[in-house]
Amino acid sequence: MAEAAKLSVEGKDLEFPVLKGTIGPDVVDIGKLYSQSGLFTFDPSFTSTASCKSTITYIDGDAGILLYRGYPIEQLAMQGDFIETCYLLYYGELPTPTQRKKFQYDITHHTMIHEQMVLFFRGFRRDAHPMAIMVAMVGALSAFYHDSTDIADPRQREVASHRMIAKLPTIAAMTYKYHIGQPFVYPRNDLSYAANFLHMCFSVPCEEYKVNEVLARAMDRIFTLHADHEQNASTSTVRLAGSSGANPFACIAAGIACLWGPAHGGANEAALKMLEEIGTVDNIPAFIEKVKDKTSKIKLMGFGHRVYKNYDPRAKILQASAHEVFEALGVKDDPLLDVARELERVALSDPYFIERKLYPNVDFYSGIILRAMGFPTSMFTVLFALARTVGWISQWKEMIEDPGQKIGRPRQLYVGPTQRDYVKMESRA
Ligand code: SDX
Picture 1: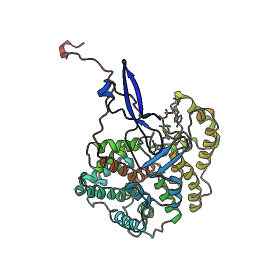
Picture 2 (picture 1 turned 30 degrees about the vertical axis):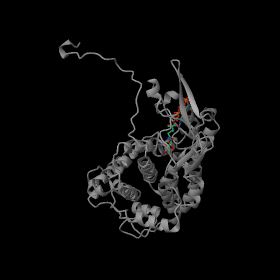
Picture 3 (picture 1 turned 180 degrees about the horizontal axis):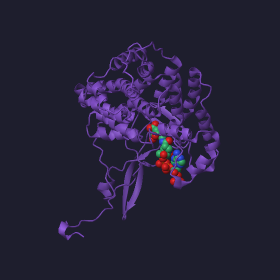
Picture 4 (picture 1 turned 135 degrees about the horizontal axis):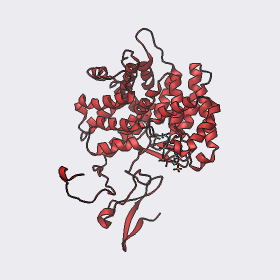
């Protein structure tokens, strides 16, 4: 690839440096385009725009490859666990046994939230969408943890990051308990991250709760699969919010709000609702026809991806994980899984989907597993946000620590009215 990209503007030849990464597409640095040409670039949904340099996650959408700090997601999901994935994403390397022990201790001892925050829940309706509560509660963390909001202090940044990784499961579990009218369950320091989350969600004061280790393993793997994903919409939201110097709790709350959208993290809830609407395998052909009819505005939720034009590697692992969960739960086979598998088979053999390179993404199978584990659909994106918090905070840290970091401030193509004078009320028609 040439070292520079040439652009001719009104007879003026301009050159822009081409920057090379370790893997993946090179980029043209157009930082000086406006000052040299008076032109902006125009790429509203950032289909051809790199917003930053990053060393955290790499996706090859054509090959269906996902690497966290260079490690394939399949290896981390099957051989590692979420706590060490958190360490890897945040610090850049797999932890040594001593590092892992210390990190696990630090996270475990930040899992409680300030007792005053419990009162906030009382203000919500019981039937509030759990994501609405999550946005509020995570944003409110900055009202309690002032001693870790000075983003210029590396130690405060680290403490705020540990607090978020540790407290999101507690807040998510409390959100679930509030939604179903059961008492909150405090975290336990003797349980692993995923087991503790299941315990906080499903134990009740009236009886002993034994965590099903297979479910804890499946939960842990789901967290690992959702932990980070390059510069997706919610991560870009966190980075842009962080670029203004906003405190990390507020930035993560902004990421949660963005993730909620059905085109993004809200797709797991929408995908399960779609499978329930289809109901049986016989209804699939009619549904597929509706999706192919653009006027219906119906999308195959859990399918398609801006980057993956091949099978999302996370979806493959989740499909396999579904069996493990059903077996552990003694569920024969969920009819929705049959509908999902047949829907996938039909879609992947239909030219409409093949031409558009539409494959199942991470949201297609996750909902079936979470439903089998006992979570209501409204909690699915909450679990996505819980897992993605480590990715968001790692990307936020990378942005803050970038010596060249400046506030993000895009420009626009203005197509509104040219200057005109004010019209007094009496002169208006
Ligand atoms: C996540 O970015 C990330 O990394 C996100 C994520 C992460 O981990 O952070 O991976 C998590 O958000 C996964 C995606 C979850 N969303 C869904 O499952 C919702 C359904 N999918 C679509 O909304 C869509 O596929 C997107 C939003 C995911 C991607 O949309 P793009 O890149 O803008 O693609 P597009 O809309 O340009 O699609 C190209 C064509 C279009 O048809 P034509 O105009 O060419 O005729 O494919 C069609 C689209 O209409 N299309 C679909 C479709 N997705 C795209 N048609 C039917 N069903 C779909 N799901």
